[in-house]
Amino acid sequence: MGILQRGILGPVMYLYRGKEIGNWKRLTAICLKIIETGSPEEISDIIPHIRVLRDESFFDPLVRHLRDSDVELKMMAALALGSLGDEKCVEPLREAYFTRKQEGYGETDPLESALISALGEVPCPRSAGIVTEILAGDVSADQVTQRSQLAVEALGQLAQQGILEAETELRRLLSEGIESLRGQIVAELSLAYWHRPGEIPDELLDQFFRLTGDKVAEVRTAARAALTSLSQLGSAKAENFLFRLSEA
Image (cartoon, rainbow, N blue to C red; front, side):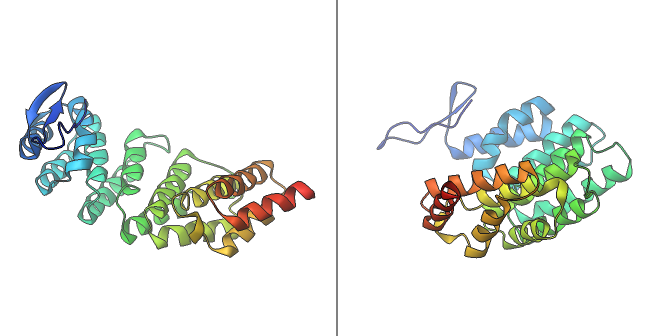
């Protein structure tokens, strides 16, 4: 399934499940109908379209599904709301997450995982604040949980989208020695600058360099990988640090 443009000078046409279905308005109408009446599998199928269309008419029915009793439907609604990327999606996602957590399904609950991932898709400071709250309530100095890993991943996704609050939180966690997550945090901070390697702060590169000598092998590996990727993307300082490591 995909959205395809036909012809440079001709009309823009779209495909849905291999069939040509018309213009942007027609595709929006099809997606709205599926959101309102479709199965979880059908909603999952159109999430790539939702991410492109981002039509405001999708919001209300998705929020209704988020409050449904069907867990699969709630999961798909969460992911679809994240795909809308609109700040107004954050509060329903937050409400659904903390309601679900209070029900005590455990750290591997797929609905909680979907809600965390969805928050990472909505680029705004409020998303970063909620994910930080989730992480603060779950992180342990000597234990990695799936939920905490997902929260760090969500912060990384937000940092990639330019949300300063997410990057600030990742850097705080790295500096304060959250032992169980530092390797992942290094990787997420590095990814945040892949599309803008020239903008990475010198102090963050300095920290990566210092961490290549960390006592934890996973952190050493992540720090060296971060410097390598940033060097390949054009960071002269990262390249210089790699040269120094090769000479050591």
